[in-house]
Length: 273
Image (tube, rainbow, N blue to C red; front, side, top):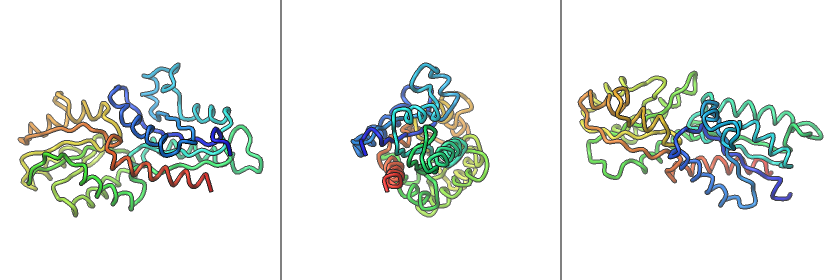
């Protein structure tokens, strides 16, 4: 099959901040190197971010619009890789889109509405094995200057429904590996208040803040590490902790990016079988 008929779509939430593009660029470049005969495209799943980018721009196009463009270009096999952390609302939207295209592809003679083969790669933590792997991997990317007795608090985004429980699953795994490494959620429970209580119970006085977010976007720079009174950094300082912030997005961490790329490999294998 000609190379132009095989494509990969990397789908991330997106961010309004230029610095956040580093994560997506890093994984895109690695995907291009791993699959030199495949066309590699990117898409942003957040409607808010796309509107900020502008409908006239490439980044302002929806995943659906980009997929339709790939169909028009003659792509037959497509691997869609989620660059989300958990299977929350944004991932579910991708899942629904791929399901529609999969049904169209299942017809005896797929028409312009479907690919011959399409597969969706899991987010960073798509199942229990992923959670265990992420927990082990996180211990390898903790701040190198961390001293004994200092805690690490990871900030996840949080979501509605059952998918939010994945953060608790990760917390349980981390507790067995290093009790001083915690995770909380920005827009769900357990939030910062619960983590402050936990940090006090652990006797920690210094806390390293890290984002468990794909990119160093607004949540990492403002809500986690910002100067505003409602940031997690300010909340920890007001609670009496010495706080150090680290802004590197998960997608910029090669060891964590490896997990997303492994899920992409599985998706590529499914459409290539």
